[in-house]
Image (cartoon, rainbow, N blue to C red; front, top):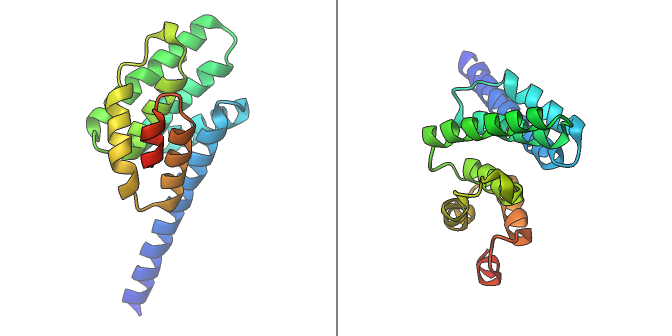
Length: 162
């Protein structure tokens, strides 16, 4: 009986964690257009464990999405630069994480050129093109594939391979 309860608790914790990442992804997808989603993404990722590179990456993205909604140019740049710094640390901690690479790729692809934050596009694109088909999480695979197909950073041939 104790084994059954332990297994039940483990399964429950795993499901809660999975639901959590789905919620975080949902906030991320809305954050560029909705300030409330960007703020919620920041709150949720601030509460998360910073030793988890993926959550740290979502926090980086949150800073950058908040920068889009802030009126003060100094605060915009401060948030954006904080996001860059966090992305660097997150990817350094887990360089093969396809979801982290997707986050950075999508931010860099959408960042205005004057911010000079496009240096990892080709590297991240290569990792995404090679890694997306191997992703077992159907939700994540769809998010990445949909974004890449709509991206100006991929050629038509690269899009067809997806």
